[in-house]
Amino acid sequence: MVKSMEHVEELITGLVASAEADLFVRLILTAEDGTTEVFGSAGITDSDLSDLPEDPNLRALCVQARQTGTPVVEDRLAEAESLLHERYGLTAVVVIPPPAASGTDAFLVFGARTVAAFEHATVERLKRVARVVHTHDQENKRRAQQLRRLVIQLTEAEDRERRRIAALLHDDLQQTLAGIKVHIDMAARRTRHDDYVTNRLETAGDLLDQAIEWSRGLSHELSPPMLRMRGLVPALRVLASGTERTHDLRVTINAPEEHPNLSPLAGHVTYRAVQELLFNIIKHAGVDEATVDLIERDAGLEITVRDHGRGFDLESALKQDSPIGLGLLSLRERIEAIGGMLEIRSIVGAGSTFTIFLPSSATMAEGVLKETTPELAGEPCNGRKLSVLVVDDHAVIRQGLVLLLNEEPDLEVVGEASSGDAAVDLAHELRPDVVVMDLTMPGLAGDDATRAILSNAPDTRIIGLSMHSEEEARDRMLSSGAAAYLSKAGPSSDLIAAVRGRSERPPSP
Image (cartoon, rainbow, N blue to C red; front, top):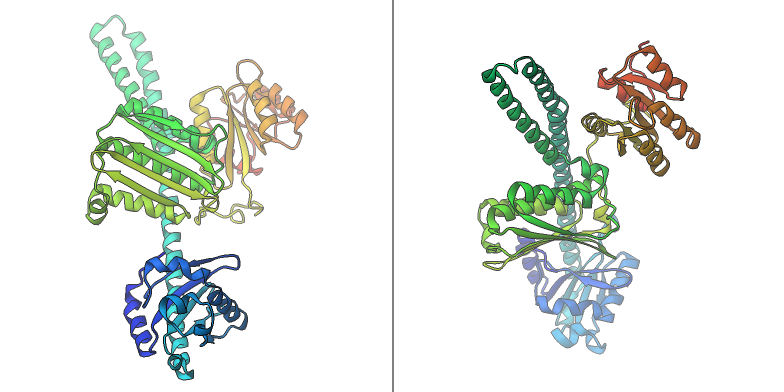
């Protein structure tokens, strides 16, 4: 693999020339096998690089240099069966190991066709060259790590802001619109004998329905709850159905039955990548079909997005300040920041294929931002989120609770149920730390469901939740074993505190 280090290439070439060396390579050797990597090279072609690790003499010299921590000079290559001598006519070679504290396996190899070229003074100069190269290498690595951290921070900040806006849309705007709709319906019943007013109110009601639907769709697009609750594949299936409904692009998702296990960061980056690629197909490909394939391999997860549309000239797109080029570069940066790779193949008139590969380490990539720390929140710092099961027969309320709780960095909603019976089954399957339980539901009521859950999992903390504020309702939940009872109309901070096992204020009677 050839690396470009243009700003040191001239320096290295000059120093190599001054040392009368005829060859320079940077060689990375592992204990089991060898791979080569070249920058600022002199005297060797890229096509010859793959053969170098096969030279047993060179490998032995690298091992010796690693063990001694000092440069090794071999000036009898002509007497040995050496690839360096046979192919390049070299009679002497100097192998300089990496500094012990450099954290790299890069050896610097200098070769010469005359033994006299590597006298003591020359070796000392080559050691200085090695220090320059290793210093530059470490600085490059440090800057790459900084860039990766910044990209991850930006990705996490974007996701956090998307979730915040989605929660505002859901918890504030949609609820307000729904409230207005209720009042309009009430007014319509009072004015049903006035055709003009009735028609106007019906029109207003229809517009409100459209606004609620638009707000709900935007909320899900900004922060799909399915991604957090069920994982990547179910979220992509929802994305596919929404894309077909909204943009007339039929998306086929081919995925294994066993959904891939991804960290929240890797799942978010991958979902956004597929979403952006599908949006590019909508804007530029001129087709009504696309395919997304997910394949789990031994080395990691491979996701391919494919269309048979217009295609584009990749080299031109990436060189110019075109929207598609900038978008693909940004996408590649985010994928590479978590340790993945993006391969793009496109032929004008024959479509495009985008392949995302996430090695095992990338699928478990962790973020770098923390909105708060468990110590600051008054919680034990055990590195694990509290798992929560949300139970409510009203979908709007249930989704609002899920969004609210998932906003907290130390809480994670692991499941939802719309009835007491489903809650008992899910609690047995998921073993959550906390259950937020509605009291009044069809079928098994919240207090009965609480007793059933605690009989199998007595350590589960159950928080009763209801619109009813009567003492009788409160007593029902607390007597069934619930740790707390709260009103749905109360402050959200009270619920969050109760889930964490604290109380923000004395419980109301």
